[in-house]
Amino acid sequence: KVRAGRGFTLQELKAAGLNPRFARTIGISVDARRRNKSIESVQLNTQRLKEYKSKLILFPVHNKKKLRAGEATEEERKVATQLNGEVLPIHQPSIKTKAKVPSEEETKFEAYVTLRKARADQRLVGIRAKRVKDAVENPEDIAKAASGKDKKAKK
Image (cartoon, rainbow, N blue to C red; front, side, top):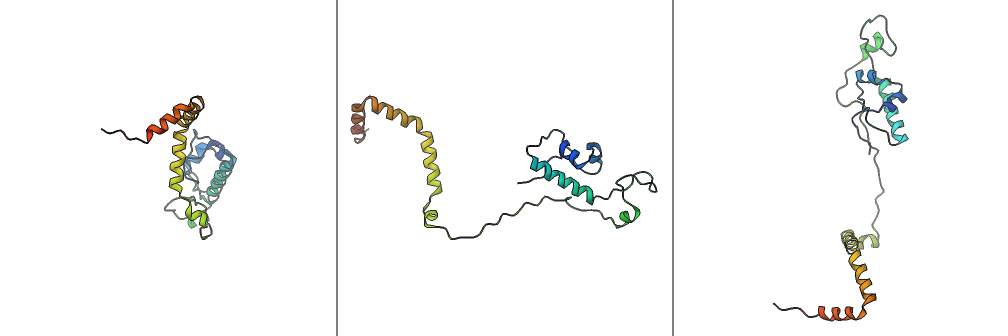
């Protein structure tokens, strides 16, 4: 699941051709502490940065007649509108599965019971191993213990 985080990494900004200080001035958050875990996420975030940069209309700060690289012309500035809301929201890909009739095996499967049995098996693995070891060493003690379990002690 893709989520909006604290900011873009320095590696992602460099791949998109942006200076971190300049990126902060045009509304891009930068997180110098974050580390990229996969190449796919770097490529995806770089693509997002390039898309943002292509849609951005940068107004000139100083001299309006002499434009710097990346600044909008007079016509572009007249057409520009202020964006209200989230800038380039992240859309999750929808996963659609086909509806099907559950099989007899699926309807009889009891997930909760299976999980409880698995947890019990995990918890009792040491005790059961000890019982098997004791049974191998002293087979007559096991016979006595089994006969004693049938009788309940009265208080």
